Length: 264
Image (cartoon, one colour):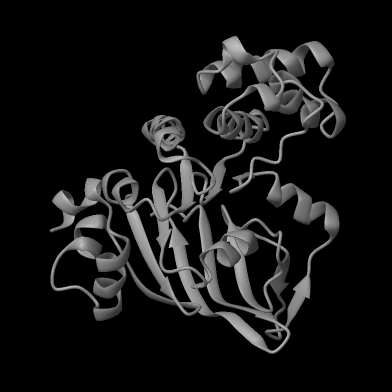
């Protein structure tokens, strides 16, 4: 049996006295698309940020392809922080795409995608730009490589952000509501890029309110509410009736027209 790409065990995250994640246990299978759904404030984005180690969990353990991320458990059962270099090594396996595009406005699309390769990974300029161009072509933007963010639509900017993450050759891609800042007509072009990645076998964890995408592309669906993981299963299990009462209420609120025919 293959190890999960990501394993989360008894994860707790507190901000001050507020607990936003409570005892999360979740395995993300390798080469599959796992979708995190749930109402706003349920802890989905916080969980994703903990997996990316952008937030440090208060308790619990995360492993990425069998390697501990951030902390390890001693023989006495105590939680100890790993050395910074080891944390960076594990984090390098993960790419992340955010709600906001976070592109540098003074750099072209090519510059945005190649910059980290040149400055962080010390890849020679020519090789970095070749790799960047390959990723821009992959997301359908090779012809826009010389354009600045202000000259690109929101959907194009988000595709540049995806190309930037892919250029670092991650094994796992995390998406935090990647279409929430887009007009509906631009959402499709971003989701199509994500569908292509899924078809290639990229391990993906997607936080999204696009229930139609989750139903048709997601291979594992996890439903969070008030910081707790209430249900995880295949789409046919999650969307089949009878459903968990809280999931039923959520779907009644968020179900989009594209998914309604699939999950009725």
